[in-house]
Image 1 (cartoon, rainbow, N blue to C red):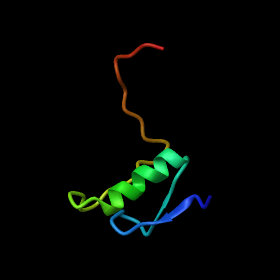
Image 2: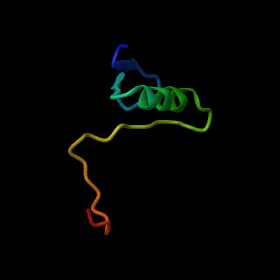
Image 3: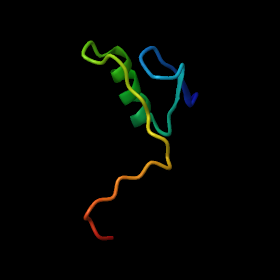
Image 4: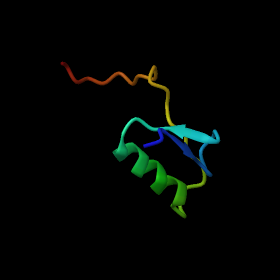
Length: 53
């Protein structure tokens, strides 16, 4: 499977997906009528939460 998806509504022309689930999700975002634009956050993006490992 190609990892780069040719996107229509992403902030960049291609989205690199890491799994089939993510690819399916990107395809839904790209075809959803209620979606205007979307972006995939970089791997380095982190949101701290109160959950303890």
